[in-house]
Amino acid sequence: MSRPPTAGFGRVLALREFRMLWLAQLISVGGNQLTRVALALLVFDRSASAGLAALTYALTLLPELVGGPMLSWLADRFARRGLMVVCDLVRTGLVAVMAVPGTPLWLLCSLVVAVQLAQSPHLAARSALLPTIAPGEHYLPASAVVNLTAQLGQLAGFAAGGAAVAALGPSRALLLNAATFTVSAALTRLGLVRRPRPSGGAPAGGRWSVLTGGAGLVRADRRLRLLVAFGTVSGFYACKEGLATPYAHAMGQGPTGVGLLLAASPAGAVVGMFVLTRWVNPDRGLRLLGPLAVASCALLTFTVVSPNTAVTCVLWAASGVFSAFQVPANAEYSRSVPDSQRGKAFGLASAAVRMAQGVGISLAGLAADHAPASVVITVFGAVGAAVSAVLALRWSRMPGRAGEAVVEPVSAPHRPSPRPRASSKDLE
Image (cartoon, rainbow, N blue to C red; front, side, top):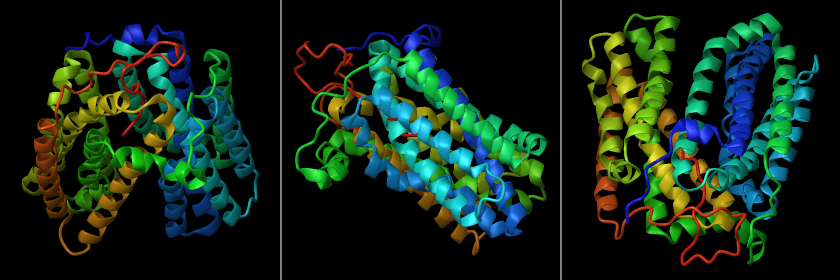
């Protein structure tokens, strides 16, 4: 059966609960970017070590690999609104301590890890709540708005983060970030309806079953395995982010060229998400998963023959446009996971995507020590296109119509459902 047309962005933002959830995300995303820039500058200023500054920045990204599968189950055990508020308040306190002048570097690094670990259950709870707050036809555009906010937040953060830290100083910038978490907690507490913890949220089988339940859930469902695999395709087209600097240098460009190259893909992704969500039917979007994934990688193969960085920016932006296939993939993943297991399913998939991106960027960086960056990017694009083609073939052979299940609000548990309820997950 065909699904109803997708609601527009305006109708989604008219939902009060979603609007509060989105505002909380918008504020905290901006604060997070400030923290990353402030920490790098603070550590470099104290240690005069570029390597330690880079390591500190990396520590803001890596804990999700551990926190995703190990802590996201909390979103299935406790009431999700309360969990999000607690995580925000914990991060407020941790970042405030980081802002204290003279904090030892070892303690700063430890606090960075703790802040990012606290983010994992928060993200899991937010994603698990999303199809409840924006059910049915509202879910796909709501998911797109969340993804667009993350992409635009990165762009704005990279553009304005340095200037803001220069004006405020690292310590004050960190205090500002602590304040953003407090505001996020207030918006969540006052703007979202109180709901009980998910039914069936207390898992059987002991603590180890809690930690590994997400892997078991995905492993047992071929559709979920394919959707997670589509998410990990980002590891191939993300390689260009790690090679933007050596590529720009080889093309005779400086920091401005690097900035334009780094901004090209997120800018294209914003356009792609908007177009795919606004004008493409959800069923057709699912049928296009394979072709779009192939195109997102295949376009990178032309990097080696690009005559200048302007052309490369266009290629990378186009790759970003096609990478918007992650939006319908996210939505289909959501429709295929029971409500009581949303949190750990999100944590597993998020960790898988981060791992793929980290491995892809790392391997590309190592390869660039032995070959030109343009060649490495081209090779990664070709391999990614081949892998995507295999996934596309397998996806086309999936039995049944994708996304037949309808997202039901958790607030109506008395309504019978012949199959597991839909759930939320953000693969980006």
